Every structure is written in C-alpha cells, then in structure tokens.
Length: 495
Image 1: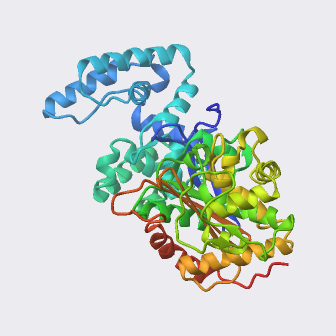
Image 2: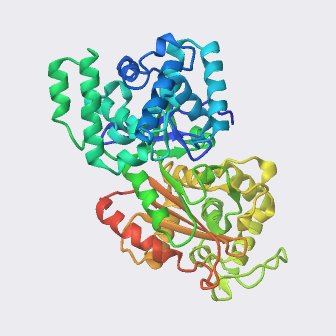
C-alpha cells in the first residue's frame, strides 16, 4: 500500500467524542504532519531562537561569532549560534554530534534550504521536523502527546512550554525547576519583544507543571483500510472505527500476555479494537491455517442439509483415508453435536463427505469470503490455499453470528456456549467460543462472541513447557475476560 497516509493522525471514539490515538508511520518515530503551523509558534520562535531569521541566508555570521566569543569567555557552551535553518538541517540529519564534519554538512543543507524554500516554508518544515523528546518529531506530535490537543488549540503557556523543552528535551523533561525557570525567561523575552501583553505575561507566570502525558501510538499504513471510517486529507486526520474502551482492552491483553499474542475485536463488521505483539498490521496481513475454527460453518451447513443427531459418524477413521490427529479420546461414533463439541476431525471429514465435499467447500468460501480456488478439501480441517488473517476469521464470525439467526444457528450457538462454559468456566448465556490450532500448535486461535461483539485471539509459539494442544492459553484469556464479562454482562436474547 502507498504511504499516502504517512503522518496522518488517527482518532478513536471515547464517550461519543474523538481522541487522538495514533500517528501513521512506517518506522518507530512518532511524526505527525501538521497541515498548518499556527502563527503564534512562528511569531514566538524568532525572538527566542533566531532574531535575524528574516535577514540571513541560513547562516548568521554575526550570531555565530557572538556565540563563539561568549562561550570562549566563559569557558563553556552558553550559546549555540545556530540559525533556525541550521537547526532544521540538524533535525533532517538526525545527528547531534559535536563534530566539525556534522557542522559543515548542517551548514550546507541550511544554505540549500534557504535557496529552495521561502522563510515561511522553512518555519513550517522546522516545526514539522524538530525533536520534542519521547520519540516525538514535529509540533503536532508533541502537542497531542503533552496536552492531548491539536496545535491550533494550545494556549500561550502550552506553546511556551513546548518551545522551552525544544532546547533540550531530555534535560527539561526531567528537571521541572529548570523548565519553569526557562519558561519564565522565554515569557520575559516575548513580553519585551511585544509578542505578549502584560496580562498574557502575568498569566503565564502563574503556570507550572502544565504538561500531560497522553501516549500516542504508531500504526503502519497497511492497517489503515481496516480501521478507517472517514479520512480528512486537508487536515491529515483519520477518524477510525476504534473505540477507546476496547482498544485499551486489546492493548492490555497483549502487553500482559506471557506469549506473543494478537487480538481483533469486531462489532457490526467494524474493527473496534486490535493489537499485536508483532506490529499493528500483523492481525490484518499475516495469514495462516486456522484449524478447527472453520468447523462451526460446516456444522451449520450440514444441519441445513438434513444432518441430525440420529446419525452417527466414525471418530476414528474417515472415508477419504486421511491420516489425521485428534486432540481427545472419544466414543468411536459421534453425532454432529458431539463431533463439534469435541472438535473431532474424522467425524467432520465424514460429515462433509456425506453432504458433498464440493458443496461444503463452496459454502465455506462464501462464509469466510475467499475465492473458490483458494479452498481445497483440506479446508474442512482449516487449511486454505493462502490461509486466513485473524481479521478475516473474526469478521466472518461476526457476520455469521449476528445475521439471519435461524434454528440451525441457534443449535450451533448452544454447543459453542457449552464449549465457552467448559473451557473458560464462566456461566454466561449467549457467549460463544471456538478454538483451533495449527502448524504443530505454533498458532493457537480462540474466537469468542458475546452479544454483537466478536473477539479473535491468536497466540504464536509453542514453548517446551506448554505441550498440550491448547496449552495454558486459556489461563491468560480467563484473567482478562473475567473482568470484561463482569462489566459488560447484560441480558441479550437471540431472536
């Protein structure tokens, strides 16, 4: 996918409002592009950092000479002497080393910037590239992180705070007294430069410890099509389908999980929460076989085509002579409800052969929305040509369990509810669970559904101390979903 959304800010929903959640970036640097830099930033920065900005060509000989003399007289660095153009060049280079070669490269880039861009363009570039600590680049990233506001909504105190930490983020962020002193110094400078009136100056003097800490995430471009509700290209803003509560839930589950985990949460066919140990786009682009999680679709199709519980199917061997493994020991013959509850592979192969392999595969391809030529007989056991992403699987379940609820789906959901209660030990009606394992148990899947919300969880890796088929995956799931169901539990009837 094109990087056309690089630097866009993603907003999610919280209590019917929207909140900045993430910045689109292909690397780990949080750099939000500001569509427009507020004029106050430009007005304030000139007297603070580069008084002769509009009069030099990128290098201020007078300022540099003055800085060298002052530093020499005091035997320490008190003044840098760099112009705004040179500071921009340094941020483009991302090199703060105090070497002659770096200074030469910085000066050459500054001269090129002055030749190719207007002064206003240079200020815009400066505020979109300058470093504000905490892996933040650009004033928009800093504004959202420290104050949970877009730059145009910042007051004078907040602007001056950002200009304060700009000089040395690591130092000022860890030294509140120094920050307050420098804010006072800059306020006086701006007052003396007629950029602040007396009322504004006095108001700033009363402010201290004003910064917040609003974490901004980084999402890759590949993630955007799956979570977008609206895109505002002019303001470089994406309104997402994400809901803060579910997004926080997803992040908490992944961060506290013992093993590499991914989760997707879908409601009304929209992603309302997701997270992954392997990066933001992993639940959407990584595809694998999904094991027994496809059996409920086959169960439903078989029931619709006349298979009932009076019929028994072999659980030890199958009519296609496939050599398959079973997770548990069961009776030699199972009806379709028992076959689903125990997730018996042989029985489901025999059921599919009874109703017709080709018809079964066609129904599966429609249900999980993949092309017919991607579905082979092995799909009965969850293996498709290209595999399924966690998002595809969760979306298919959300659609399947919320649309056109008929008698056969009601029978299916009774069994999925029984599995839910047995495996998680939660006595909750209308909550469903299906699990699946594949790739020698390296990928373990759990699909849970309650009311109108579907949770897809993928756990990777199979450590030596976790030899059972489902391992201790459900110990972790129970920890998180126990509190979830206590908060979300409500009467919900399938009609």
